Image (tube, rainbow, N blue to C red; front, side, top):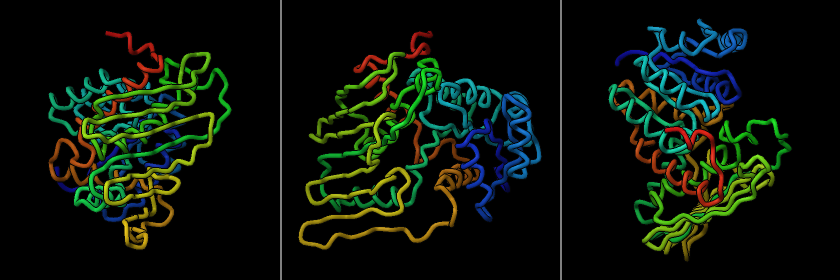
Length: 335
């Protein structure tokens, strides 16, 4: 691929709007948004008018059939990721798919196998991995700045009032804290340590059988551990910390899209690490958009920042956590 990467946005919710705004604000990025689709044509038209997008479709099929679309951004709830991303891949489109990647590892494996079979680019939209500060943190850890990792701590939660009809309470829609919020702490830990050798978990479940408040303890044969939590009934700090044998790195509230972190090492003053001011008014999703655009222009089939095997490993851990706490989705029973 050369020249301009032409994006199609599939779904018109809040996360789609944030991503599209960030993408359009990237000057000289080699990317443009040419179409948007929703299951409601009126919703697609409103979205298109808001962002100055030329084409608005009232079905996903019309979007993926558009010859001017190179890559589809799937912004549906995760219960529809398998269907939407699979539709795009089968139509020959590259795909950036929101996280959690799918409802379970089996569905994620189907998408990965399909993308590889068709020779198409596929990436989970784990924007945290593309953030310059997270990339700087991983460089410091790799270079031994804090020694060997011993403990990772991370949490993500807010206190919400969700009725039984809300998608976060519906097992069929992948409800609960884990896939919406817990994917961030799990992905953070596995970015640093890889797939755990042991998974323990406990949770408060809703009457419908989804997790409202979940604690996880992951263990590695190296001796490293990760203490992680997520909640939709408790306002957690949403911070993260990585402790090694020679120091510690602390991320403040909003660790998954940080503006700085603090490096602590014995005998030295704490060091605040920043990457310089980013574009004003953007959320941070521009970094993942830039990575997909870069990879496609380079002819790559997956991103080294968000490798597919890493996304599959995170899904296996999320599956294991659900198994430990007794959360099952109807999709788990499909063959």
